[in-house]
Length: 477
Image 1: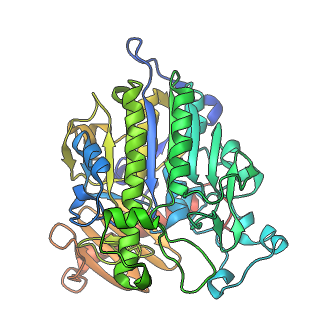
Image 2: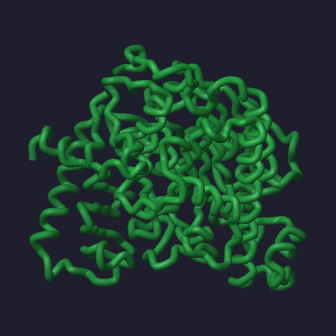
């Protein structure tokens, strides 16, 4: 397949775009300032773990209200079934295989209860891994359009100084740089993990993490309400805590809060499946309340009508406490339960209220949409893998996304139209998503022609990724 044909076929999503110094800013009609941007990410939240997505168990009134005031996406994907690469794509608009962050920055000895010493941790992969510094993240572009950018929560794209948020375009940062922290101690397997700016801090040890990220996001909005801002709030909820004790604590929430909202909880039976599920639900409800407070602050300052709000989960819910509904499997897998996630957007005047969008869309479309919102053109020599999805969300155009590809080590998957192919250590098959969203009926033998076609598209994508300008840290060049 010729490269030109492939670029034409991948959902209008591979757009040749200019080096950072060549970026231009479009003039906005009239004198209305560009919209503020509030990007909220939950961690490992199941597809159905929102009231508006069908849950009768999880209490999420604020996110349900957000959906009622905007659009709810039902056919929306992330680029990887776990944290780091998914977040890297969200902030760069590029496939993990293109931006170089296509696996996790994690230590594995903690899985065997090993406590790293300070000096061991300093030279471990979790500490020294990070996204290639040549990658351009969205706050760097927004800065040139006059935006102030802040991140409050989970970073996960590198812990060395050169990889931290303030070196990647953000103006303010309070949060943790790895993943899976204890909600109160803010430690990951015994390692203190919270930072303010570039410096480690234990100033808030003992305070529930969701409260901290809400507090800092609201401080940021209060401080910068007179200017266009980009407020990125990647909560750690409802990710499991990472502690060395056995049994692992799982998802954490304050006991009085759990009893208030989910009165069937019995702390004496804390390790039961039901107790873990209830703590998980309570953490989501607590996060929902925090989101509600942030949204209320926008209302109080008259900012809501000129703020684009985006909410999504970074990947599918994990096995155990999460509920992915009828989707097969979950976090870490390339079946729908690992990569199809809830996503809600509210953009007054641009997106109709109370709508549901079933268009084929992905997290790769968020970067171009934010550029459009800010009135900027991305650099021409950076290849983006998505497109501005605003017309699809507004219902004025169909999505130009036709294909999507995933790879996690030896596991591979592709969606072409409604055909989904998975080849993995956890199962394989060809599925027609228009009739079989649960991926139960393998049509590989009945439709070998379709299987060949989808595999050929994946192979073409793989060649394109191999031909891309190489990026650290995993690629050999």
